[in-house]
Picture (cartoon, rainbow, N blue to C red):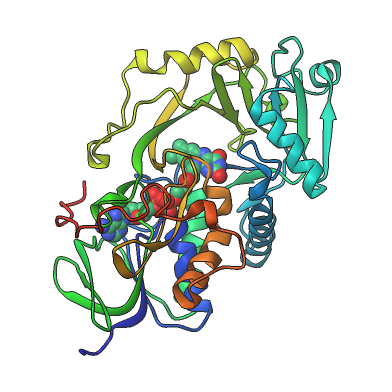
Length: 391
Ligand SMILES: Cc1cc2nc3c(=O)[nH]c(=O)nc-3n(C[C@H](O)[C@H](O)[C@H](O)COP(=O)(O)OP(=O)(O)OC[C@H]3O[C@@H](n4cnc5c(N)ncnc54)[C@H](O)[C@@H]3O)c2cc1C
């Protein structure tokens, strides 16, 4: 067997990959990492100024152990780096009490004893007049919630990984990974590399290297609005929020620049069969659903966005990530398909990646994230066609 370049390679150093490289290097193994663009770039899922952190979870209380650990890690990293990575603003969930996301929020706080306040419709209107009330809707203020800084977090994890000895290469797309006897061969444009095992964290692009991964790339559009009075949207008085009213799913953050407020509408954008065909400048009519929602639900904001950005995430059919060994590709672990809600859990998935790659398991129950769950016994994964040049 040829000499190994490292024990573990991490392919894709965005949200999950940067944290995985950090946690693997910290565990004392030799780490080689590849990123197709520059570190902290804005083409994947780790960009757009802010991300919400919530622990009272719309997606279900089974996430709370991961979220608790993630929050501990965010608080530690914020403190030890001296950077404003996590800002505890609380996170306000708004909706009718009997809709599934609000039932999951209530189950999360009840089953895991999370600090929170339940606001009846009158209290919600009184405390948070920035949101237009809809009859019967309540609020649950998750006191563990807050905001994260995605680009800065990725760059901080890259620095930590390097400080712990990882060799990380920017602007180095991986074209192919090929498991074989005693190791895995990785091909980049100018050479091949040999490692013992590989962690694939290529997010929306995951099918280029793991073609059978059941992940679809989807754009998420972020929009920023000018408030009539920005003081009403400071972090001290306007928590991060997530709202489900009728068919509208809104989310947003307090002002971070003292000028604008980010508010977005999810689930109104079509999947993108080829993540490399992303259009990052939308025509005016495409922004109409967002303006319409802001006009209805956030009357203190001017409804025409002053800025928009388009980013990608990888989605699975059940909106639950893939985390585990790749069927048919020995020595390869995948973590992808975070389906629009993975940023907040990035550091804990860094730990999970290290545990999976080094020990074959994790202390967290990852059964529902099994990459094989959509087709156990399906035909073995084929090797990918070479990855086309990045654009
Ligand atoms: C606009 C938007 C808003 C969101 N809001 C929230 C939120 O408020 N809270 C929350 O928790 N989550 C949120 N999410 C979801 C969260 O950001 C994602 O789930 C998470 O960032 C996914 O991380 P990832 O590591 O899978 O992908 P990425 O961060 O995109 O990382 C993949 C990396 O792999 C690299 N790569 C791909 N192919 C190759 C290759 N062949 N060789 C080398 N490198 C390669 C890419 O360039 C990229 O850097 C949001 C997502 C978006 C897009």
